[in-house]
Amino acid sequence: MHNNKTIKNLPTSERPYEKFLSLGASGLSDADLLAIIIKTGTRDKTVIDIAQDILSGRHGNLLNLYEMSYEELLSIPGIGQIKAIQLKAIAELSLRIAKTKKVQSIRMNNPQTIADYYMEQMRHLTNEVVICAYFDVKSRFLGDKFISKGSLSSSVVDIGSIIRTALDKNASKLVLLHNHPSGDCTPSRNDIAVTDRLIEGSGIFSIELCDHIIIGDNEYYSFYENKLI
Image 1: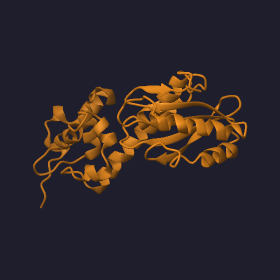
Image 2 (image 1 turned 90 degrees about the vertical axis):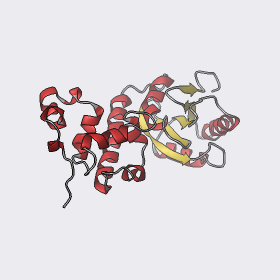
Image 3 (image 1 turned 180 degrees about the vertical axis):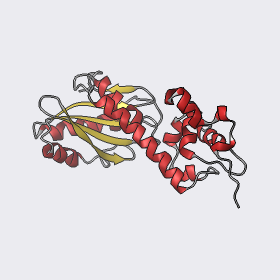
């Protein structure tokens, strides 16, 4: 018979549920909040210990939960399939909530508002990802589309697909975005070459590429702001 350490094994003053009722969610530590989701510990570790194992990785905070893969979570003693799925689902919901709050602040003529919207989604990725954001004639945000994963090059970025999606959405303006996993936003020759190709290709259909934004580690580079578009 298993004798896992549950939240009930903790002193009352250390139990996350009781702390939630007395202090509210904002009064709990990151480990407390994770412990409420994880619920049970193992024979050797309390649920708080397991939560700390998640938090003690590369960043030493909740960014670990966002960056850890499903498989990496499963490698932590005490985290099974269901808990790993729940934790990844919560991480994704948190990201979507943050984006939902920021989408209303996007302004076509303000690259920082666009960069802010995509920053948390793209800054921690370990591979280059290309996204295109679409806007109508009045510069209203229509949505975006994942374009490719890998290095940014003319062979990877499908210019035709970007333009077809713009036509489907009745978009008249585009903003291309991709991340630099190194954190350095300096544009490469490939970045500039792809930008030039998209300007040329979209222009044929009277669709304007308004900016190309490179996302780094909590910073960005705008081709528009640097007068490269």
